[in-house]
Length: 93
Image (cartoon, rainbow, N blue to C red; front, side, top):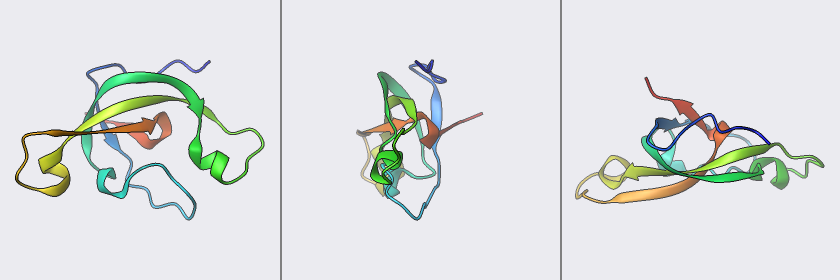
């Protein structure tokens, strides 16, 4: 089992990726900063499964919340939560 790299409360950035294959990183969250609010356990990476890999990578999955105003502009005041695999995330200094 892979130990989670991030902890609840960590600030993370969703990678600004645009792969030529399926990805579970929503376009609206790419490049945005959010906060880890839950660790969902480890799961096979959806990108690898969609590409038909016999042995997809298994990674921790996190629930990350983003301020809605940062994603879509005003009015804000609420959050959007997205489940993201660890390789979709990077550390925010």
